[in-house]
Amino acid sequence: MRRIVIVGGGTGGTILANNLARRLRREIEAGQVLVTLLSASPRHMYQPGLLYVAFGKMASSDLYRDEDGLLAPGIQFYVDPVESFDLDHNEVKTKSGVTYGYDYLAICTGSRALPTSVPGLAEAGHHVYTEEAALKTCSALKDFPGGRIAIVTGVPHKCPMVPLELTFMMYDYFKDREMLDKVSFTYTYPIGRIHSLENVAKWAAKEFDRMGVHYETLFNAKEVDGAKRQVHSEEGTVVDYDLLITVPPHKGMEVIEKNKLGASGWIPTHRTSLAMEGRDNVFVLGDTTNIPISKAGSTTHYEAEVLGENLASLATQGRAMRAYEGKVFCFIEAGKDRATYASFDYKSPPQPEPPTRAIHWFKLAYNRLYWNSVRGLL
Ligand SMILES: Cc1cc2nc3c(=O)[nH]c(=O)nc-3n(C[C@H](O)[C@H](O)[C@H](O)COP(=O)(O)OP(=O)(O)OC[C@H]3O[C@@H](n4cnc5c(N)ncnc54)[C@H](O)[C@@H]3O)c2cc1C
Image 1 (cartoon, rainbow, N blue to C red):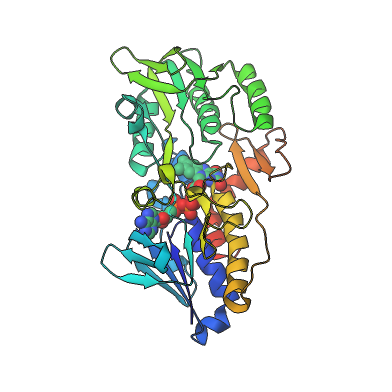
Image 2 (tube, rainbow, N blue to C red; image 1 turned 90 degrees about the vertical axis):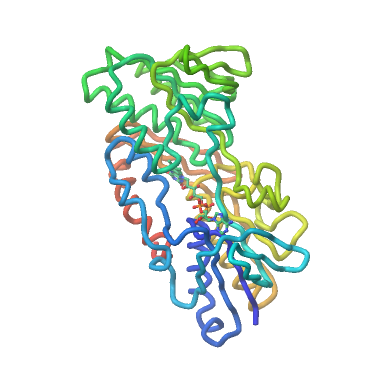
């Protein structure tokens, strides 16, 4: 029997498990292949929904579904986080003490925002990377009487569009409340332009100019002085704020660091085969890879489809055929009712179109269709 173990039941792990259950249905029923999914939580969160929670446009209860209800029959699912990886002996061990042997292993444990990595940021800044933080941001926006809003971004972070989306959505939020004369926006970004993707940066800079959003590039937050309401950068510059909105720097999960699978929790991964460097039966998906590409659900989705096909053919024929070509598709909310998108891969950069209402409505529809998408129905 061939044993495939998937660690992490978020976007990547769920899509991969369902993809394998579909492709290997006969082999699973015949007892020739066993697909096991190990996760840390019985619930699956639709993380992009956190942005809407922060603006009071989605109830936080709508972010969740039970993971077992998203999985196809035939997948062995256990809520039992993996604590140690013994890659030399093809085994992982869980918190409850169970050891799972594997022929093929897929690791997709995601990433975590670390506002504590910049002194003062966790205490002073608001973000949208957990349910609790998104709800607090919602209250902070509601109660804000006006003043200087700073948007401070650390790298790497998941979803490359969040810093822009927060800025565009806040602008419309305060416009609707007739407060634009009482607020100012300063957007900072760590590199020499306002977004990591050059064409997105060019497009967004024009929008910011039109809206009167001030931007500072080459701004890597060093510390936040909450008493003086100032953010100091490594580069020696200072931004003043009355409301600090942040996209905190991220790391991979602690379990990856503790097991020395990759510095800062990012696992060295081959950009097309998705194999962990130095291993031919260990694969990595989604945020956990160190591939220099957007950490996004869509990246993870496209990777999971490629890996599903490859693992199915490895398990049945001993060879993998498909390459991940770097495909990513990200919606960009450009305000409360307009959106555009960035679609790109390793060879072709994105070319964002002017935002439209239709794309915004499509994104809202996708917020619900996500549950079908992770089931493999889209
Ligand atoms: C505010 C916000 C907005 C976003 N917007 C977008 C967007 O518009 N478009 C887009 O494409 N992406 C967006 N994303 C990013 C997207 O949600 C992530 O990139 C995606 O979920 C990554 O998938 P993943 O499978 O790598 O990790 P995750 O989906 O985070 O799943 C990780 C899983 O691993 C489990 N796990 C952790 N540790 C262990 C362990 N030790 N053992 C077993 N299991 C473990 C967790 O419980 C979880 O189930 C957004 C994210 C946020 C926070």
